[in-house]
Image (cartoon, rainbow, N blue to C red; front, side, top):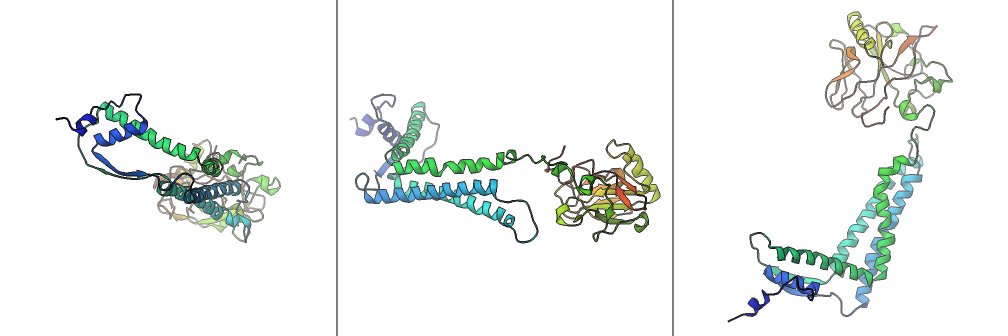
Length: 364
């Protein structure tokens, strides 16, 4: 005796007369799935309840779009450069975070509401089974995915408000994602003369063309005898605001090496084309900005001539052009070329030859 179940097993899913939903139902039956319920969540078409849900979802997408557009506006036009005091730039990062969060939450809640409130209500029961999938079941799976896409597409086509919400509301989200990737192309960061990223306060261009003195944090210049043998001192460019955050890339460690150590350091410096002739007597100066993450590398151990960065324990060998010998730093500290002026004060012969700062900053 042939059962209904046996007759149904003879259905050919490649039959072009079958509708997509019939193929989906056949696939469900073959997978031993019982579709208990598959029906619209609304009574009739374009009911008041359906329109209310559509408006709510559209509102979420519009909110996401407005927030995404606000993100772009703040990202491009809001003042971002740090300034002392209470300025508009203090709100740059919070505004980016808030607008992007609202935008993403709007998209997320909109999708959830669509799935929970708008798509047909389905309850299915499936028995688990092992084994690979035959070719026809692969066809069924593909048709099932297309059927779901059709359901979504038809839902959008007959609901113009949702179509507009997706087109207008979600478009800024894509732009917000792309903005950080192309944001650096909006303005040339090297347009200044000298370029901001490649210059510190020791560049004579910031001192009316005059060589820049090395000074203490109070602006007083430094003579060689002010630093004892084996000692070190943090120095700043002798220009207006040289010891302030305006020139936060300029703090430098001036070290008075012992004679034997100085001889070794000079030999290694002169063997390097970028550091040749940069020492003055037994004195050497290196950038204090760690090349790993920008922390102050200031713990100098004169017995071993190692300079330690306390943040992540990078160590630099002072007598070997401040090459990293331990820790995460992979690039040496830039050396500042030294000499003394007619009054016996330390001055910088020129700016650092290597770019100051962490590895992820731009450099030639």
